[in-house]
Image (tube, rainbow, N blue to C red; front, side, top):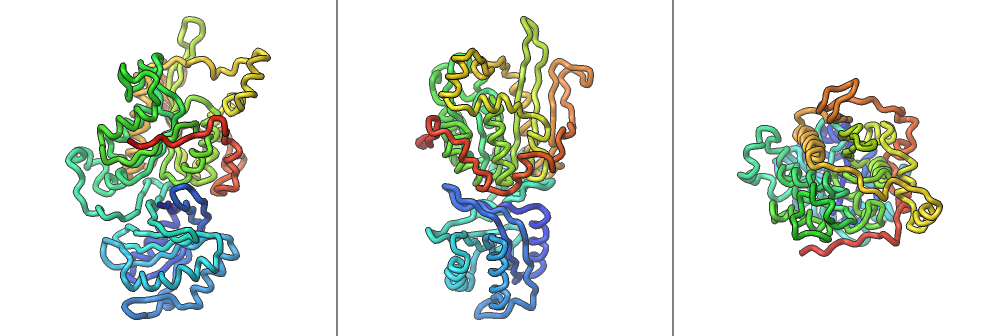
Length: 463
């Protein structure tokens, strides 16, 4: 499986060109990264092929060979991988026998002309695409054509169940999502990082909305102090891994769901390898080290990222603050660093090795990571519901996402008690942000430097 990420403006340009005629061609030039699931492409440029460069062939059409040579030469000059696109009439795009014969000659030629780079081909129809990819190691299907930076989060991949009826379980939310939005929900691959009180509630709502493909990242097990808020657990689940509990909850609601559980932190090698292939990342983590890694990863791989957090501040025997906040980050939006939402000192402490932490403790330092923070299920519920609703608005196209929301339970000089405040202006211009400077560079960001072998992840076996 593989993913192709398309910027909104380039996707619109590509679709307009291909929709105007049943036999048109275009090429995408893309950066790429290898993941355990397949290549992950990030489209940077689209070349629309004029009609006079498409010539009749037996049973169909093909490109003028000189045009193809020019396309490949541009990929060589720009150090990009190629994605070929063409249109068919109808609404159920699939490669025809003529396409298959053409690919039999074209694929070896492109792979030898662009060594070390994956190649993909896609056929479009009815606003949807069917894609396949080739590498020297093999061949596979493109799981996702994702447009994740516009007013609507779009999943454009065609599948065999394109025309299937929406299950009756979701009939009453069709006025909100419509058929296209409900289908997108079932096809998005969502990573939920952190499956404690907040993450478990977000996950529960996503499953009920209709998401059916998950990557879950968690290193901790349920203990007695989490039983006041962990909605995936009951009294018999003490010491059970939170990822196992989350998978059980998903399967009870949706037995057909695809679930990968990674037993480890977000900075583990396994998580860092797999996350670039998902469609959307949701962070419900409990420290700014994990938050910093997810923020940097989202920037480097053009990942849509939602960060949710709750907090209660206690002074003596008095609660001074209680609230939550949600930040929605599309590839060209301000990031968590821009908003000043990452405490770099806390992040350094959280990402320190076990030996470094032990030395800090020996010198009398307290990081703040060693004491369980106050937590109440109702506050988690407010944040989880707001996160799910915001995602619902974005996936359905109801409106553009609100980028920053801040919930103040107690009230302050700028809000009434229990009020969500929007919007907040980024504190740092994007052009001055060290993470935004990494936009789209992929593997060059060298996120592997965060991986800790002593706390590395394993993928828990599926039952």
